[in-house]
Length: 145
Image 1: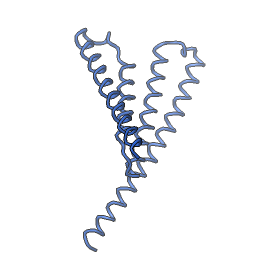
Image 2 (image 1 turned 180 degrees about the horizontal axis):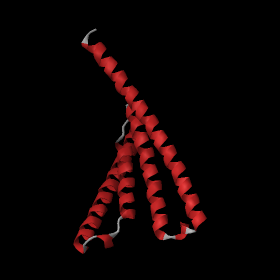
Image 3 (image 1 turned 180 degrees about the vertical axis):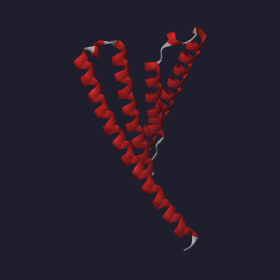
Image 4 (image 1 turned 90 degrees about the horizontal axis):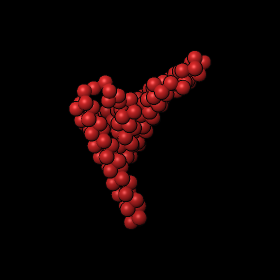
């Protein structure tokens, strides 16, 4: 067995692990959706569905599920040897948005809350700008073909 044979074996092993990771993410998503359904049913039953904090918690859970979906799409694209840049940027936007929604400035000193808010705004601006550049670059490259 020469070096190329060993490399081919390890490449197949890596691809197998990537596929297992995809299945794990599908399982986590299914469990998360089931749990979300149970939480909604409990909130409706108890009448707590109208409380702002409970709605924010539900939105946080939904955004976490979106992050799981985006990570799954990243694994699938990576396994197919496709570009993952757009998917990673979208995942970042969802993750920062999730943090913004669950951020409570009143829990922090005024200066810390301001700096954290500015950090979130800067992150979102950079990520949205990056997504714009990626989409524009992709559109321009497809116009050339």
